[in-house]
Image (cartoon, helix red, strand yellow):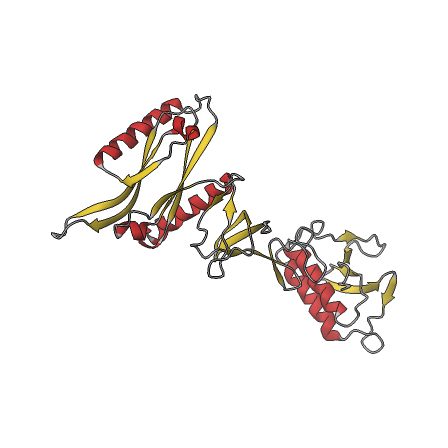
Length: 316
């Protein structure tokens, strides 16, 4: 049996989207994700937004049509704004698709049908829209959805197979763009600088996807700790004085204080200065100390001292 996983996918900047997929089911190295209906709506809206921006001649669109098990049959017309030549004299017609949905017959095995839109289809679609508006919220049948995938470039070339209904799988999920689109894994970035596939929940540095710091100052805290550990691997925390620009005034390894003197301690001025710079830059855009895990340190001489704790270092 092929193993399925829950993860997130994207195509460049399109996404990320939660899905289920089988990692070994690849098309030219790309994934074939299956989406829940709610996520399928997000995918559909995204394809339509891209098509509106870049043009339908180079963008498929996906559409979710909603109804109920007791809804009357409806007609839906989808336009692309494209035209195609229909005869040798150069006559042209709009590239548009009509989808007819027999809602009350779906549970009995009836199927939606797709064809090129005609004037009669457009009239029927307007009638369906008006009727749906009048009946909105009044139906008692179970919610139903029909998902349509339209490949406009091929439709403009006269293809009769470039529009299809996407049927749900046995788990009620929809395979959109599977074995066709260049789906890849979404990744999450760790403050250590590495990245993992979304379902790989722990980084090699020890941080997990959910526990990793997400605010600029929390991320800077981890990076500052990594900088200090480059010379003292046992460092666990530091005390930061936020008077003036702010600087690290004490470094601890457990409960033991690390000597910060340039001539006797393990640190050099450059390393301490780099850690200070990391924190100062983050403080310039993020002042939520509590969200970053900074704890105020009571001190009779200053109310600007904070302890910052560093994640446990990797042990494997």
